[in-house]
Image (cartoon, rainbow, N blue to C red):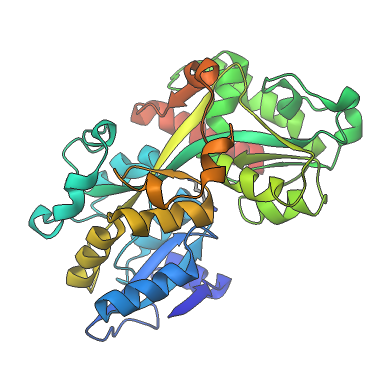
Amino acid sequence: MTIRRLPLAIKAAALAGLTLASQAHAEGTLHFANWSDYFPPELLKKFEKDTGIHATLDAYDSNETLLAKLKAGGGAYDVVVPSDSFIEIFVKEGLLQKLDKSQLPNLANLKDKFKTLSYDPGHDYTVPYLWGTTGYTYDSAKAPGGKFEESWKPFFEPPEDFKGKVVALNSVDDMWAPATYYAGVDECTEDPKEAQKVLDLMLKQKPLLAMYNSDGTIERMAAGEVWMHQQWNGAYHRAHAQRASLVYVYPKEGIRLFIDNLAIPKDATNVKEANIFLNWMMQPENIAAASNFAKYNNAITGSEKFMDKELFDDPAINTPADKLDRLKPFKLCSPKSLALRAKVWTKLKK
Ligand code: N2P
């Protein structure tokens, strides 16, 4: 088992369209790329033991980074983990291959509500991995009166003394949705004036931020290095285990629900091994190990009995009934709308 973080130089080479060094894959090998800190190393070892396939794991920080890597080509990966909101984009770009469902009998283990998903209704390209929400966390020990309202307001308009103590995720996909919820703009808007409103909100927030960063969110909050962080619920849960004063917010304006997925890139080298892996991950005890490590829910029937009870006890993971209507699944927006948000992001980051 090899776990590595893709060095920037390789990232740059991949972006420049150069071939990656590790192209000659031996038989019985699986090259897996997943979001950082999102897959238990012991589970990869178990996969190797169960199947005899040697596995490597690379990490990336966002859908945008994964997209750039796959577009650069090189066939470096056999399995990747794109989010629901990016599936259509990856498929349109011809970056994923159709799944051979005869190799995936464990698709039968999917819970009913994950059997038909809007972004890939027949599981032609993807099977669900883990799912969760993208809210934000704050340290109640630092909040005025120990509490913030359940809104995106404290995140986008934090109090002055939070200056330099707030972090946003470094992805237009993660930031655009809550900014539109808070600005009261349809997330699929095609109107430049509305996009400007969203940009203005983010521009006003920018000087108060310590950084945009999607990696290391757990460590930063657990260490008390910052006091507020846009964060996924599983990451919150892990940070909270180290700092009890942390609070996860379900903003009343809405909170993005995400489903991440296992998929096989078009140019994968080890397709047989990739299928074995996808099917193996849909076994209840295996996906439960991923849930127990990353602290997110999964889509597999019967996984509950292998999952840690504490996950079900955390309202950040097990959304309370009165907050369910705040969860917003992603919307597939028009190319015009997506181009508008990309422009906003470029302007924000320059
Ligand atoms: C965990 C990554 C969570 C993925 N580091 C959110 N889509």
